[in-house]
Image: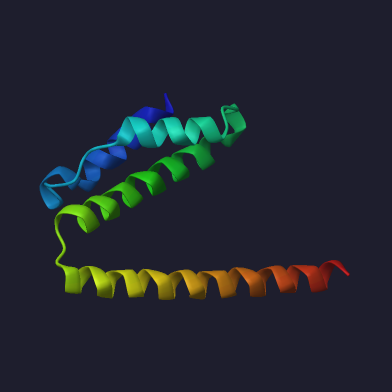
Length: 102
């Protein structure tokens, strides 16, 4: 049943025409999220993870099939900067939570 929501989101986003070289890996994305948790109370998390995996697959297809070496180097640097920023932000958030607990 939750796959229907993922499928509607994919169709509504119109990725087939916007990103014609990308593969539609919705079933795989949904199964990965289902493997994460099958319980009904985690349905929103499954839908979020399914969408996230689908977007990561789009990025992977773009990286593999569409970019030049120079573009991919810039893209890789941008993703690495984003990951460093995200890690620092999550670390700061955890530090704040630890201070509130103690």
